[in-house]
Length: 145
Image (cartoon, rainbow, N blue to C red):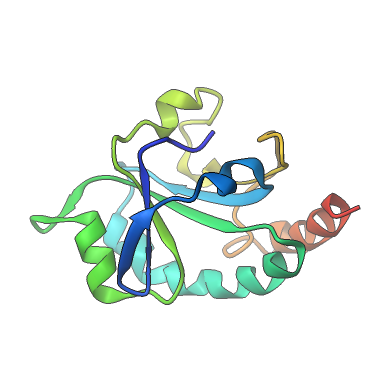
């Protein structure tokens, strides 16, 4: 379940996350406050290749960041200023994990493909795990049937 108070940052523009996103299958990559956010942010452009797999099937990529400050700057402002070339979402109230208690604490499992009902159909990050990437392509094609 995506948090109600979530914003999207895309190309320097900041707006509320569209409600239509809630009812779609989607690839969620959650970056919580325990991770090195600057490290992860520098790798975000790598997710562009995932977009080429998800867009034909209308499966959005939701990179969801926990709301925090980075060097005294709110994360939303930081991401807006550097324009990563892909939409980035920020959980303003840091409620994602509370609303989804089944999400494991292990950050390696904070990437998952969910179907339209919000049920996970694949867990793992296709950007960093080649095995998951291969499986990701297969599962996304099956979801369209």
